[in-house]
Length: 271
Length: 285
Image (cartoon, rainbow over all chains, first blue to last red; front, side, top):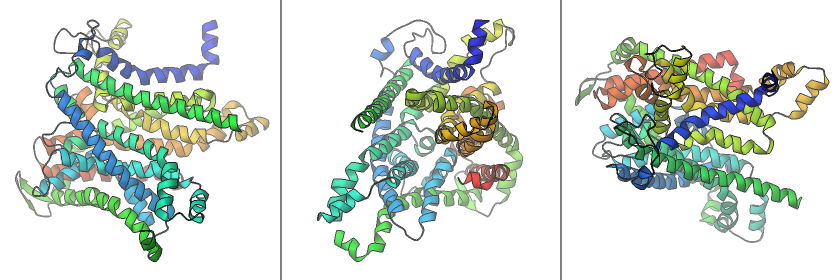
């Protein structure tokens, strides 16, 4: 009975923790099965613990190349999309101009279109203009820049709206020209937002399957590789790479949470 | 550069916008135009001709209305389940988690850090016939000795719900977190019971989050094909599976293109109906 009373009093907490458990379950399974020692071709049933998969992570043909392609596309596409997106965000927040509303709509639209439609329409463009585009690395790059830009604009815009412009005005009053002001004041203050936007962009790029699948031709990124191999059998090495990506990402995110927590504490200390 | 902007101040925003806008125009708008052009063609690969073939659309609807209906049914069910799972969790984080808020938010986005395909494949392990879930359900006779969960509608809907859950939870959190605690105190001072305070204050104020979360979950869910492909059978095929197969396997581009437009139009209609139900002012924030 005491258990029942405890559950009743803390029903919301219990429910919340159960949902957290549900969210974590597949992640735990992915990591757990990266240590599995499957007897046959299928990595579905737990057989026994081994470190071999981690030691021999690129023992599967094509896995390393696919991962390298993913990282290259991610870096290039994020770089280009971040530059284009930051410029657009500056224009939208800081300038009144004709067509601002339609610019906002154009930025919003790719985010609210199903991925399969984005992929399909790009493929139609590429197939109809084969003299300009040949499916492969660069068509994947084009597609990724396209769908990342919107997320960059939205993230940086949010930061720019709360931006204190007095510092820029002070710099100008002290004789700095626009370029120096941008370089010495605006950019450093925006850096955290730009970094956050770029990390989001990279994460979206490296995780994307649907659009990439349409734009890839014969080229393989890591998700495209997994799709191909999922129809045969998924080797535990795929879990190893996924676990490694997860651990790096979660490590960065945790560091960010701790950093924010620390700086909030410091600010309270000053005040 | 500075003096150039001084002489032409009106040009600055357009120069900043030009590269990004050009990219979106060339690789988002122009491709949609090509998709429209393709959808009205006739013929067999690789000999297509533009013939204003509007029958592509009517034939696509009549041939694939089952998959179309199924997509919206699955997306709708998944969206509702995600809302029911996410709301209490996010409410708890906003109200009770205190200094641990950011950590629990990290738990919500953590699934995004595992590649989409792989977190879907993990459900193969969890729902496998030899796995713990099926074992438990069989031992309490919810499932018969030969019944399983994999490759069923349930598995596909569970996969979709899981994959798009963060899209529901994050906007919900933003709207719940912004609620001014003093409003709830005022409700309490005016002798509202906790239930009344929730129904009259918290729930209406979190409506924008519910609306945003619902849209962000429903739209990608309706276009999804991965869950049906990996966790289902042909009996669970959604419209995304058909578009994908027509484009990349049977090379029937005109039908695939018209189906893409039908999907977009159907989503738009669903959004309009939804806007009518919840009120337009809530939809635009």
